[in-house]
Structures are given as C-alpha cells and as structure tokens.
Image (cartoon, rainbow, N blue to C red; front, side, top):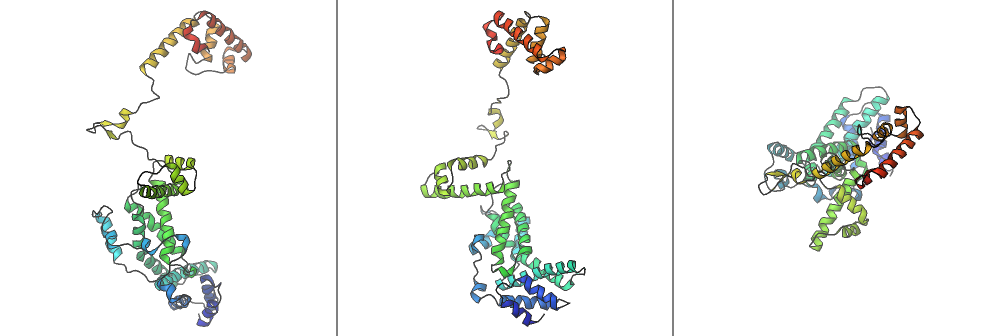
Length: 377
C-alpha cells in the first residue's frame, strides 16, 4: 500500500477507516504488519498535538479524566479502608503493572483491531483464508487495549458499590463492556478510547445491578431514573440540611410528584420475614406481622354458628328446594354452581331452577330469624 493512496484519503473530510483499508485491499494482494503501522501513522497525522495530548472526548458520554483514573488507594483498599480479598488484591496488583497507553497508542491499536475485522470480512467475502499476520496483530492489539484499561473498569465499578452486587461481580460485568468497546472502537471518530469505553462499561454494570441485585426486577430505564432520584435527593439533603420532600425532588427533576412517588415505592427493597427482632434478637419479624388471610377464632366460631343456623332453617324446605340452595350457594362442596349447572344435575331448565330458588328463599325470609339476614340478602 503506497503512501500516495493514503494521502489521497487523508485529504477527504469524509474519509473513514473503512475507506482507507478498502483502498489498501484493492491495490495489494498481501497485507503486512507494516501496512497497519503506515495506516496508523498517517491517521495520527490528522490529529493536532493538542488533540493528542488533551482530548476531552464527546459530551454525550459525560465523563472526565478524574472519573476515569484510579488512584493507588483505589487498587489496594475498599471504601471503608479495609484490605480487599486475596483474589481481588492479586488481580489489582497484576493490573497495576500494565502501563497506561498514550492517545497515539490507543489510535494505533484501535486501527489494528479494525483492520483485523476487515481482514476477516474480506476473507469470508472472497472465500479465502485471512492473513495470519494481520489477524495475530489484531488479536494482540485487542489484548493490549483490554489490559491497559482494566483499571478504568475498577474505577467505574467502585462507584456502583453498595447497590446489591459485590465489587468482584461489578468488575466482571464491567470487563464485558470493556471487551465490547474494544471491538467497536473506531479511532477515526476523534475521541479517546477511555471516553468511549466508559459508556459501555457503565451500561453493563447498570444492567447487571438492575437484573441481578434486586428481588423485584426493575426495567433498566426505571433503574437509571431511580438512581437519578437518589442523587438529587442526596444533593438536596446536603443543601437543605434535612430530608427533601417528594415535591422538592420532583421540582428539581422536572417531573410529577406522582411519578416520583411511584419510583420511590418501586425502588424499596423487601424485608425478609426472618429478620431478627427484639432486644436480644430472639424473635423474627414474621412473628409480628398479622396474617390477614388467617381467620380469627371469633370469625371461625361465628361461621360455624351460622352454618348450624342455616342447616336448621333448611329443614323447613322441601328436599328439592333444600338441594337447589345447597348447590347454588356451595353448602355441600364449597363451590357455588350456576343455574345452568344445577339444572343439568336435576335435568330441568335453568328457569325452573331459578323459580325453585326464589320460592325457597322466600320461605326462609318468612320463617327464619334476623340472624340469617346477611346470608339471605
């Protein structure tokens, strides 16, 4: 691939990485490691020195260099100052030995990854084997980008602690996002890799918390809104010196009071009925909670008396009338039957069953005491 062809692409504002490498494929049958390095070097010439030394990235990703860096204390201690577990400590020590990448190195490695993807696409398209040297270079570039940015994953994961997932789990999910970022990073777009990767890492960590950390799962968009409510509430608490009201939070977020109430209610964590209670923790919360589905002794006694009174009252009816009411009101098996179902059992029409029921209830109203009023009505 000649420098002249690359210069032609560099002069075009719309030139992309794909254009550059496609042109190389159209003029050369064999791609080498030097081709990738030349492409990277020439693309780097499109960046000014200021851009290479201090790129803030795109605003949409909402990240700063302070957010992305991990101090030495972050790599050796937990938030409460205690030592991390042996596995995490070993992981962080190994990670700390990997040197950081410069912006130039990020661009060069990103180009190599993209060229490897294009090499594979061309091999599939033309039914040939991919160039081993290009694929090996791309694989090595992926590894270097991942290893150099593992500290970024830890930095982001630490900010999501105490939300239901252990730090190691958060790091694992963040690493998944980092690998996706390495695969998709396009150096020609003009932002730093760390800025681009931050978005993917946060997405994977947030989704993991939303899907795994809660007993009752919240949709991801609702989970993110709940987090925003928490941040606004904490800021207002600091400003006001007291707990903010729901209305104050809603006004700050430009939302309705009803919506904020629903979010706060949905975000509440359930409490186990086995939670210890009492001065000596000798009881459980479940012992203090009333079971509203369980009938009280008084209710059981009243129902038993009512059944006896109904049974006595039914003795004043004919056998046919008594049987119809027993079927209609579930006095035999606990299941009430429709007029049609009772009619099928007795081999008469539903209208005839209705007439018998009305006649039987009328007799009970005349002969029974006031104790059966609720049942008859």
